[in-house]
Length: 110
View 1 (cartoon, helix red, strand yellow):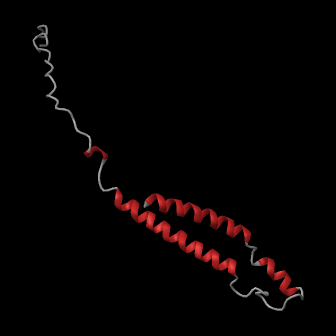
View 2 (cartoon, rainbow, N blue to C red; view 1 turned 135 degrees about the vertical axis):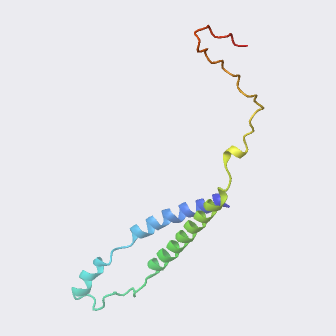
View 3 (cartoon, rainbow, N blue to C red; view 1 turned 30 degrees about the vertical axis):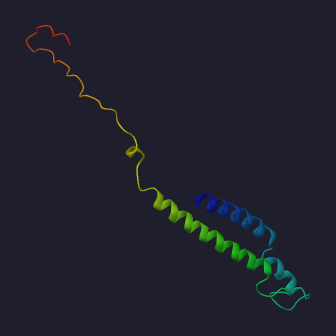
């Protein structure tokens, strides 16, 4: 499920980039509205054209997939990797003889 969400998330992200680049800025219509060709601020398209509705829908899908991916990733990491590692049965390390304090040579290790 996480893989499908990531694929949808990346595709919607790329679609948002393309759809935003296709739109023209709000300042582009202002010159035409004061130039005498149009008397309305919004022009002939109305206040919310189809491209803006598509952008809003894609942004909603992008935000929903972001929240779902964050929720899934926060709930999947409950364990640790070290729980699955089994340590082999090791004996205690051999005691290292301490050097004598009277100046005698140390005893050989067994």
